Amino acid sequence: MSDWQPKQYLKFKNERTQPTIDLAGRIDIADPKRIIDIGCGPGNSTEILRRRWPGAEIIGLDNSANMLEKAAADHPDIKWILMDASSDLSSLGEFDVVFSNAVLQWIPNHEELIPKLYRLLSQGGVLAVQAPYIKELPVYSDIIRTAGSSKWSVYFRQIPEFPKHCSLKHYYDIVCDLTENLAVWQTDYIHVMNSHADIVEWYKGTGLRPFLDMLPGESEKREFTLDYVNSLSESYPAEKNGKILLPFRRVFFLAYR
Ligand SMILES: C[S@@+](CC[C@H](N)C(=O)[O-])C[C@H]1O[C@@H](n2cnc3c(N)ncnc32)[C@H](O)[C@@H]1O
Image 1 (cartoon, rainbow, N blue to C red):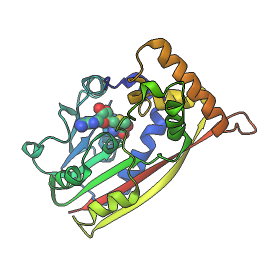
Image 2 (image 1 turned 90 degrees about the horizontal axis):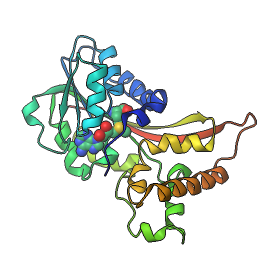
Image 3 (image 1 turned 90 degrees about the vertical axis):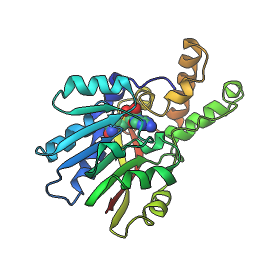
Image 4 (image 1 turned 135 degrees about the horizontal axis):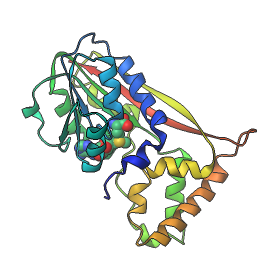
């Protein structure tokens, strides 16, 4: 898959960072000494962790060189590590908070990954995760519909495996084998968008990328995007002030050790 583009991703920085604020706000640990932000991206989630726990040692880890370059430029005081989250992270030591916002949907085999992340915790530490669940929402299902149309299906014989769509039950079933001290919840964030094209701008920064990667040239990417916008216009009627309300469901869990 093509590398992440921090500029595109951060066009909606506030919307993308709100779940981190909400997740960090629910963590019941007053004074963690070591924190790791798994899939830190351009550092927007790490920045929130730094603000909440200014005295802690914080590491941001990501496997995108582009994202880490932006993170390091904006926050030279934080330690950034280029690494795959599914590799063996035990050499990094123990953490009081293992945090991951909007990342797990990009990584396979949660049945192995989540226990592995949990084992990085010190006693009393917490694994704190948020991941979107939008399989049935038009922002995602309209891409599948467009890709499956007779015009485009030749390029999409196989639907990209990522982003994964995992329900709250999926995460609960894994986490309940690790600890009884846990919390799970989900929230529908409603983003107020200026236009249907803005929804594409939003999703171009994340889940639309694997689909655009499958198209051969710029003209196909442009035309596919236009067809997707048209489909979105039917799925999300404009409000009386012309704005579009975009619901986006996110699943959260906290697992204390
Ligand atoms: C949607 S961004 C989330 C960025 C940030 N955490 C936030 O809250 O906005 C997903 C990030 O996960 C990273 N990522 C995806 N798969 C990864 C993996 N296997 N190991 C490490 N990072 C990964 C991507 O490079 C990207 O920066």
